[in-house]
Amino acid sequence: MRPLQPAMGVPVTNAIRTRDEILSALAAFPDELARVIQGASSPEDLLRPASDGGWGVVEVLPHLRDWEEIYFERARRIVEEERPHLPGYDDALWAIERDYRGQDPYETLEDFRRIREEHLAFLQELPPEAWERVGEHGYYGEITLRWLENHVCDHDQEHLQQVRDALAG
Image 1: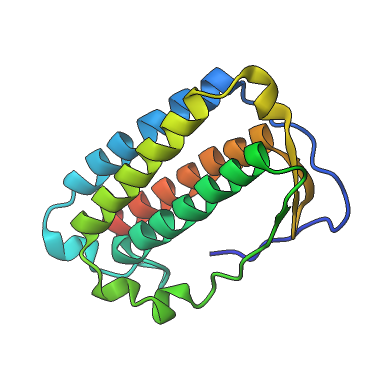
Image 2: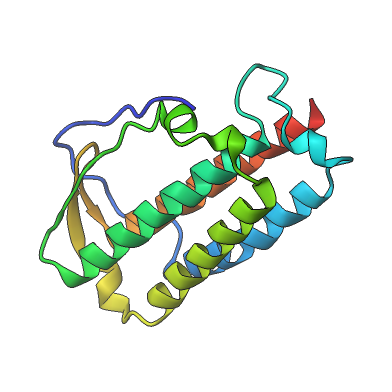
C-alpha cells in the first residue's frame, strides 16, 4: 500500500461523484468483490501473496474490513459532532499486528459486508445537507462527508484491482 501524501492544511474540495453515485458504488462493491474472489480457482489462491510481493487477498480483505469500521465511525462523527477531529492512521503494520494472514478470508468478507451494510443504511437516511458537513482530517485537513465517502469508493476500487492482480498472478 502506498503511503498517504497529504497536503497539510489545504482544504480538500468536494468529490466529483454525486451522493447517488456514491451510494450506488458503496452498495455494489461487496458483491463485486465477492464475484472476483469466487472466481479464484482454489481457496489456496486467496492465501497466495501477489506476484509483485504485495498483499494477497488474505491481507486485502481484513484491511478493507478494518478501514470500513473507521470510515463508518468517521461518517457518524461528521454528522453528529461539530467539526470533529478525525485522526489519521498509519496502517503499515496492521497486517502483522492484527495477523491478517491468520484470518479466514470468507469470514472477513462477511464481516466487511455486514459493516458496509450498516454504513450504507446510515448514509441512506441522511438528508442532502448532511453530506456537506465537515470534519478535520489529520492528514487531509477539512473534508466533507461527501469527500470522505467518495474517498471510500476510490479505496474500494484500488483494492479491488489489487485483488484481481493477486488472483491473476
